[in-house]
Amino acid sequence: DSYLFFTTRHGVVKRTSVTEFSNIRQNGLRALNLKEDDELVNSLLTADNTNLFLVTKKGMAIMFEENTLRPMGRTATGVIAMRLKKDDEIVSLEIASNDKQVLIISENGYGKRTQVSKYKLQSRAGVGVKTYKITEKTGNIADAKIVEESDEVMIINSDGTLIRTPVAEISLLSRDTSGVKVMRSGENDVISAIEIIQSDEE
Figure 1 (tube, rainbow, N blue to C red):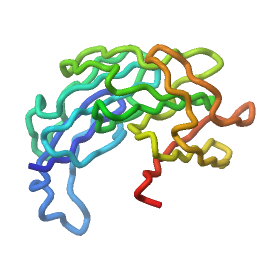
Figure 2: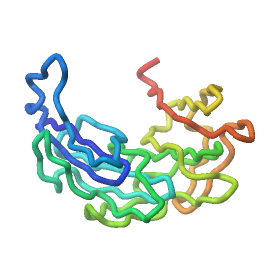
Figure 3: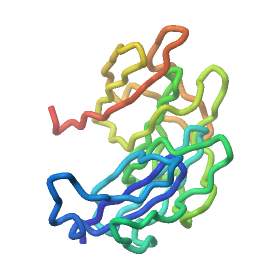
């Protein structure tokens, strides 16, 4: 009952049973058939009863049930998870539950948290809902993670500077907002990545 769930920049998703990867050769196995101009964003180990949460760089999000997507073989391309505007792309794939929050950090270092319960389950292949107010000041979304109040987040920008801060110190706000400044950076620097440190990992 365990699956690997994949998503790409262009909003294509696929889930494949872990049994398909039981005999991996020394030079590896093809796990996903990518189109030439697409690339993998994330892959997760799931358990058939999870809710998947996707966020785009232009501030849209969609949450749908994993088991609405039939399992596919290793060489399959996958199906559309979210319909994107022309200049948009997926930046995050996470497993979500209503008792947790989504943490969003923008390229210019603005961030906020929003309760997952503020998002309704939708059908796969929809356009999603607005989850962040993009402005010239904030820049596009750099990354998004599902978090708990007790977690900490590490944020690194393009010049190699890293900060670590408690998630609880980042404002808890509604969906269509921009958040507050979380990390200051140089004029030409942008946030490169964020990573969550859970309380039981200390």
